Every structure is written in structure tokens, then in C-alpha cells.
Image 1 (tube, one colour):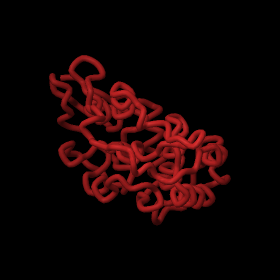
Image 2 (image 1 turned 180 degrees about the horizontal axis):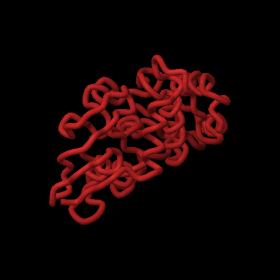
Image 3 (image 1 turned 135 degrees about the vertical axis):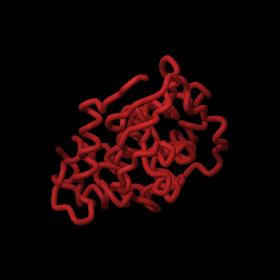
Image 4 (image 1 turned 30 degrees about the vertical axis):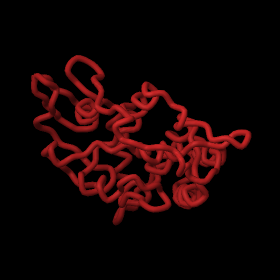
Length: 218
């Protein structure tokens, strides 16, 4: 059976989740990646695109990424420790630390794969250029599939935390743990995919980053 161990880069992400500024009872701090505040300032602010059609089935997810492994299985393999998978690439044993609530899980069936910026939120995040909405409402099916299976977007978290989040943005939901890291990744994803933010979302992110070490800069 295939065995996967946590790569160094992803181990750093897990360690980040256990040392961030928002962790209850912890005095440890970490700095956010560079230019977090500058990236936030560069995001276009626009009301949510409530006129954009959203159907989850239009965003193909858990596509095959290699061999018999799909994107969900690969995320479980990459974000866990001591993970063992069967011949179909289904993780059967391992340990995962949910970065949203710090819960350690050893049963993969109790985990969800969350899109850090939810699919419905992406669909609503079309910027305005020359008075017209552009962005996700014009994405092709292939572009939507690329986002839905992007390993940098996927977060292995407890089902409880993921379902309490739903498709809410940071103005309405923030994790109990690692709020600094969560805010930074949210800004990075929206920047990379050229998405907009609404004013309340911007203000919530700015508040979190202001409380991070070095104002959200490494």
C-alpha cells in the first residue's frame, strides 16, 4: 500500500496552525507572508455579485490528479502525518491536525476538504471594470475545475468546523485557530485569482492582519 509522509513545506503549514496569534492559551506568534497588507489593499472592493449564477455541479471537484488519486485524496495524503493509503489511493490511517480548531483526527472519514475561499464565495467575487462585472461569471468550466481542485485552496479540516463555516467570508466566520494564517491565505487566493472583496470582508481581514505580528508582514 502506498505510504505518504508530510512534505516539509506542508509541515510548516501545520506548525503555523499551532502557533498563530489567535490560538487560545498560546503566547507563540508567527509572522504572515510578505506583503499581506499590500495585497489586501490591492484587491478591488465591490458588492457581492449576487446576480452570478452558482451551482456546485458547475465546479467539477475531486478530479484525478495522478494515477488513481483525486484532489481530495491527495490533500489528505499531503496534509496528514504517517498517512497510509490503499491501492485506490484512499487514506486509511494517519493523523491530521485541523487548522481551524486544532483538533487531532485519526479517522479520515471524520474530515472534510474545505475550499478556503468557498466555491460560492468565488462565484460572488467578480470585480467591476468599466461598469461591467468580470471574473468568475465568465470562467470556463475548465477554469472552475482548476480552482476547485487547486491544492493551495484545499484545507483538510474537521467536518464540524467546515460545516460551521459553510460558504461564509471572514466578515461572518473566522476559525478558532490561526486567524492570521487564514486571513493571509484568503488574501493570497483572492489576489491570485483576481477576485474582488466586499467592504465588510475587507474590514474583517484588515482587523485580523492588524493584530498579527509585524502587521502581517514577515
